[in-house]
Image 1: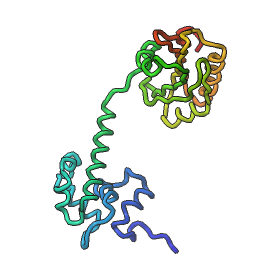
Image 2: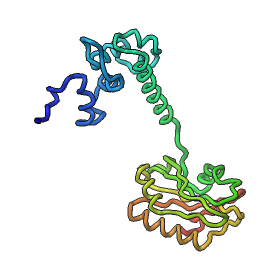
Image 3: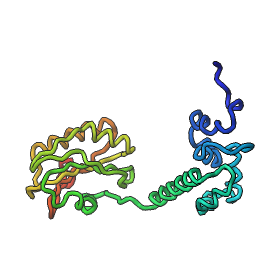
Image 4: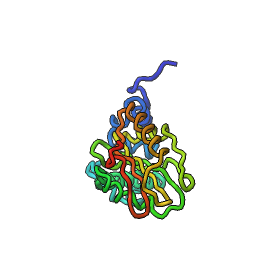
Length: 228
């Protein structure tokens, strides 16, 4: 069967197909809303219905987000379930914007990294190994627990560290683990692991900014001590 060109698609199917063919940024606000509601009403496609809803909101998503379920249900073709879907999607967008406006901490020194992360590793009876993922401005984009173990050993898979770095689009990382014993000095295993991660990350153009060892009251920095 020959594949239909876009102009031959049924209009109510076009937003979904258009997203698959051209990507989400190619769709108008009405087309994106039409995907949410799925179908329109007799005599009006989902796209036409969403254009009308947006027009009544001055084509402003902020105005639309102020409508409640009862107001949206006044439109023929919009029931409670569809109204809730629209409200939920707009609320997610609002929350995403709110998160984006919050400045991520800049960890460009061992002290800043320690102050930021000390609560994660204080008062633990066992050892945990974490990685803090940073962007090019040394702002935190993600933290990930890589492994936990006994009093003096934590198994660490370097592949997991690098996979998360790529997924987070991170340009640099900070390694962090605690010593429940209170000893600040790095062990041979700590040094060997640091070298292993450093070399693997370097191949992928990811920088290891530091490796911090935490105790309940202080920290040790590989970078400050000249080991990185």
